[in-house]
Amino acid sequence: MPTISDLFDLAYGHSLELNRLKRSNAVNAINFVSRAARNNGVTARVVQVPGLAPAPAGTITVALNGQGGAGVAFLQPIHYYCGFHVMVLTPKVQMTEAEKLWWATCITANRFRFGFGRQANRTLKDLVLPDPSEMPDWVQRADFSRFDGCAKSLDARPIAVLGADQWQSFRYDEIFEIRNGYYNKKPPTTDNAIGVPFIGATEYQNGITSYVALEDVKRYSRDGTVKSGEALSRKLFPGACITVTNNGSVGEAFYQADRFTCSHDVNPLYLKDRTVQLTPALGLFLATVIRAEKYRWGYGRKWRPIRMPSSRISVPVTQKGNPDWQLMEQYIESLPFSSKIS
Image 1 (cartoon, rainbow, N blue to C red):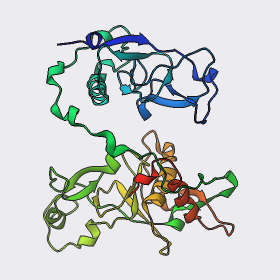
Image 2 (image 1 turned 90 degrees about the vertical axis):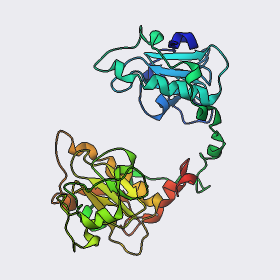
Image 3 (image 1 turned 180 degrees about the vertical axis):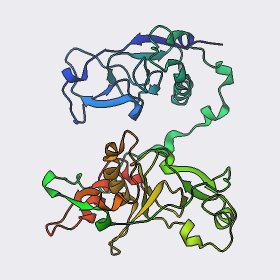
Image 4 (image 1 turned 60 degrees about the vertical axis):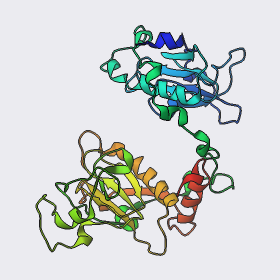
């Protein structure tokens, strides 16, 4: 079985410190890749350093240590700078983009080896990978053209300005109709996505932890027992709402477009203003604002429904002091990738 060093040339990155660089959002700014486990490892964009060439596009970066990021590999699509403890992998032979993504996935699958403070500085080169002959056929068949143009915004106008003086604080029960979740014990789940989404106390997959057949939603009560005659409207929630976790991953918020059922650790929120449609764009704005406040519920604090109505949320307002739903929606629609919001 080959090791990483059999397939790639390994070299330490630039080992730059972000606080010594000048951040920039200009078109010609350079990506700064650090030991982050998200956003392809990119934590900032910076002004190019005179005389310092960026690492080339098409190489793979691997975080060598760091909380949560050690062992995570990303294919870098454009040239970039590196922070400390980032290894740059250059293929020894010609590889397609799909093949590089496959190897990055294989490397990341071994990230568990670098938990609990272990570093990958000396051992990364010896990490064993699958034999190239074992690469699945679908890797070569992967078609990336379907992602062409995905970075376009839905609205061609410039990104709306959200000044600090435009925001105002409201109680949750002034803006939202807060409903209680239902299940203490979920009914039997199905292995496919043809059933009703079950929203649980998680920070992943838009809150969906499983799927439940509609017939089982009808049959099973909140405690996991079979009871007939219970109102389906109490168990099944319409879409166009935001689900917020009050226990577990407290403060996670997701826009739900379709009907669903959920745990009692989740509160569905519907707009009180019935003249306003909670579109995906507006829902994403509000969910982001709610999620930004989740730090308030750290250290085991729960955000039970008795607390939520009096909690406060800040949103942009009109000159009359009412929530400016149109501005919130336009802001999301003006962002890159918003063309893919359905």
